[in-house]
Image (cartoon, rainbow, N blue to C red; front, top):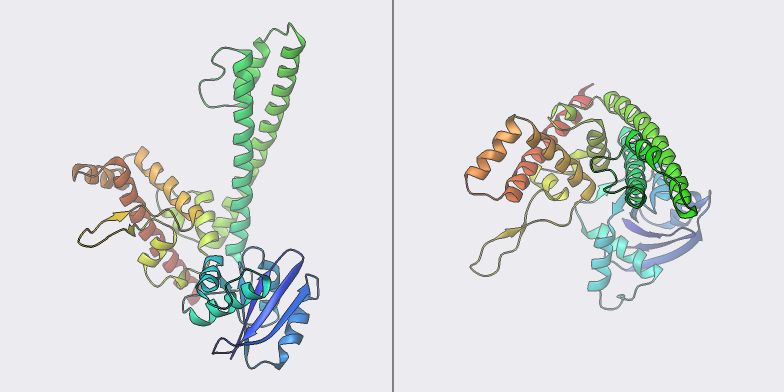
Length: 342
């Protein structure tokens, strides 16, 4: 078997083939083009049972990975941190360059038993695209609101104390007496920001409707969990991908950073917050946890019980997030099993 590592870039890709003993068999650098997968396969024809490992197959290496999968090749996704560790631990190939990076990707794939195999695009990818688009628009709206708040504070004392809306902003602008050129320009720019926010509100409403339709079409039961709406469900399904790659709920919790990290030393046994993991998944679970805290129910009761046990508020929320993570995992596994039998 031959493992071929690919270090993808915007304009070029570098591929390195190694055998089971990690010995380099050949190197190949090509320009990114419509024929890139075909050229890679032609180059790999002379190798014994070639398999492909691509760094960031869901990022910069996404297109070449999907092209190889569509051609029937076996492709694995290698996280940059794995390849980086291999390169840094190497003695003779520790310098960072494209061939060494590609070889590190191949070695990481050869020695790891928990790599994600790249699959053809499916509904998970659709939900991921929709979730990212909704998130980007929401962030842009927040930026416009922040800038508008700053301008309104220069036009009226206290500005808008509550949540920013188009109606409230227009009411403030209507009260402003334009007495000089500076004020006139402030009002003009504020009006443009209000128009931008109104446009984004319309787009966000359409995005939420579109995402809800896609989530329903997926047949998921994740939305049965209190606090998990269409957007959170799209994030969870889209960024989890193939849930069977997580053997247990503990593995899933470690991936989404709701499981604590050991920080023990000597006789002292302790754990701390996990700052790593998939932060988008962690954010979606956090939203679900906060939603459950706002209303009476099982989540709020669990939180209050943890507080009664002497936990701090942050510790109780972390415990609730882990509980939600376990429930999400159960729903995703059940959804996968149901889809497999249909």
